Length: 125
Image (cartoon, rainbow, N blue to C red; front, side, top):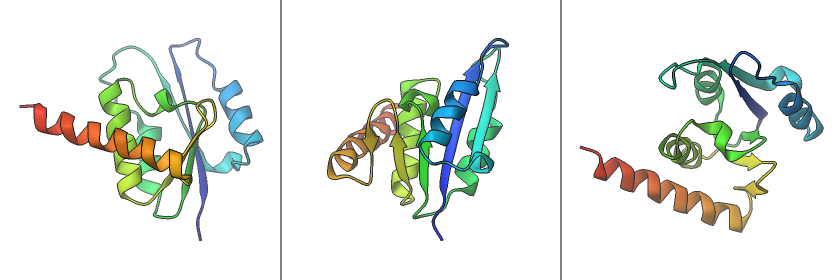
């Protein structure tokens, strides 16, 4: 059975997840299925909530985020995360951007991001 999962992240000690959590709940995500991270300091720190979400999500599931940039700290990280979800058959919905990989337009955008991730992997030594 497909699940709708959410992901929210806030940066710094003063970063609040409340607004994102409210938006995800309003979009129909069960609060018990929302994975979160509060990051502070170095960009090198592991994001346990994102890793748990990626481990939990299965083909047919839907991952909902408030904005695409929540999926990574860099363009490279975001493109690799989108590529991973797409390759695994997991739908991605970004509320602020209107991106939904269940639609034809969303699939085209995801394909471009997947191709960019593949290009990045080839270019890196």
